[in-house]
Amino acid sequence: MRPIGSYLRPFTLAFLLAIHVFAQPDAKQQATTLEQQGRTPEAGSAWRAIDSAHPSDPEPLAHLGLLAFRQDNYSEAIRYYRRALAIAPSMQGLRPNLGLAYFKNGDYKQAIEMFSPMLKAKPDDDRLTLLVGMSHYGLGEYAAATPYLKQSAERDPQNLTLLLTLAHSCLFAHEYPCVLDTFHKLVALNAESAEADMLVGEALDEMKDPVGAQREFRAAIATNPREPNAHFGLGYLLWTKGQYAEAAPQFQAELDNNPQHAQAMLYLADSNIQLDKLDEALPILESVLELTPSSAMAHRDLGIIHAARNRNDEGDDAR
Image 1 (spheres, helix red, strand yellow):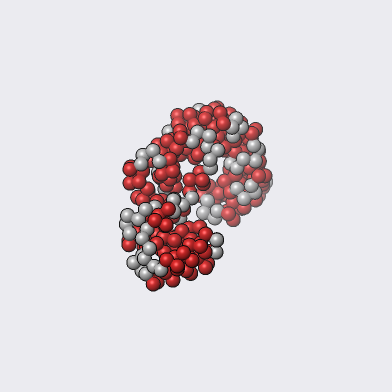
Image 2 (image 1 turned 120 degrees about the vertical axis):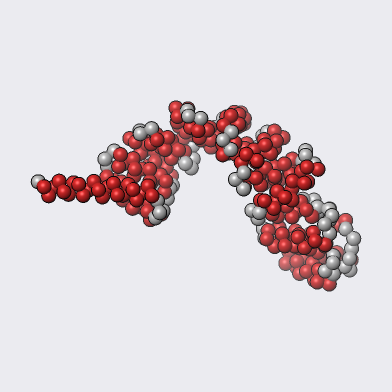
C-alpha cells in the first residue's frame, strides 16, 4: 500500500544539474557536494554566496528552495522558488516544486493554480491528480476534490488511506452512494475498519436510515472500542431519538477514552437532565463551560437545573 505521503516528495531535481552554469564551476561543485553530503548549513551558505555574486542565476535559488523544503521550512522554500521562477519562468521542474511547497505550506489555492495547468497537459499523471484533489480537499471543496480522489483511488486501489480520504470527501460532498461504494472497497482490503464503519454510519444517518446508522456505529465500536468519536457518534444517534438512558453510557464511554471531549460531556449532561439526574449533570456542565465558555446549549441546560432547584426550594418553603 502506497501512503499518500509518498506522493509528496520534491519533484525531479534533474533540472538543477541541467541548466547553464553562471557562477564559477568550482563554487557550484563545492556547494553541490556539501548538499549531497547532507551538510545543509554549509551548503546553504555556499549557495547564498553564489546567489549574492550572481543574482541573475536561478540555480542557487532553486537549490536554496530545495534545502528549505527538506527542512520543512516551506515559506522559505516558496520565497526562493518564486525568485527563481521570476528569473527563469521555463526552468524545468521549478513550477512543480513550487506547487508542492505551496501544498505543504497549506496554501492550497496557490497549489491548485500551479498544478492545474500541468495536469491539463498530463491528465494521466497520478501524482498531479492526487495533489489537485488533496488541495481541493484541504480547502473544504469536497465536491471538486471527489472526482480527482476517485481517479487516484482507481489507480491505487490498495491504498487504504486514500480510500478513507475519498470516503470522507464523498460524505462531506453529500455523495452518499459514493461513500457506500468506497466502503465496500475498504472492507475488501480490511474487513475490520472502525473508521469505515463510522463513515457509513454517518452516510446512512444522512440518508434517513437511523437503524442502519446505529448498526454501523455499533460495528465500529465492536471493531475498536477506543476509536475516537465512535461511542459519541452512537450516543448522539440515540440521543436524537430520545433514547437517553442508552445514550448516556455511550457518552461516558467516549469520556473514558478522552476525558476532554467537550461534546461528549455536554450531551452526557443533557441526557442526565432528561433522565432527571440533575445533581449528576451539574458538575459536568461546569466542566463543559470551563472548556467552551460560549456553549449555548450548556448555558441553557445550566439554566434548566437552576430553575428546577428554585422550584424545589419554593416548594420546601411553602411546606
